[in-house]
Length: 148
Image (cartoon, rainbow, N blue to C red):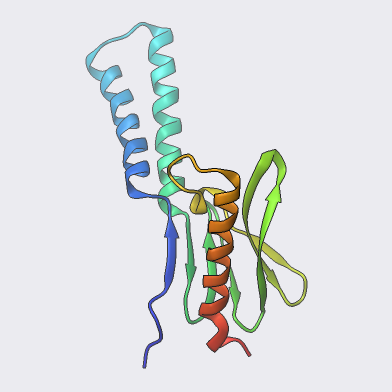
């Protein structure tokens, strides 16, 4: 018997598509427009940065399933199994950023990348904090049957 469907958060596909489109436009500008050297260097730099950001955005995720909570960034994946899980907090960090912090029973914690959780449209701080509180409650409620 399988449990409920996993909860997943990813960067919206339109954002990664836009980054890859920007990289392609930079490459096309250099191939077909024959710009001056400074413009060529600028478009190459922008295209490379957009391609790298697109790959990073494509790889990142937050998944909550029967086994626990998994967070993947560019180079590594970290996970917290339900028997290690204690609770989820909404934390305010430097530069007025806010995210979820997954806290283990032994005091270790895992911060979720802010870009996975923030709304796509401009939203007030109070509303964002409330939305993250709802996400924290969803994660906690999902894990209740699996916690030991």
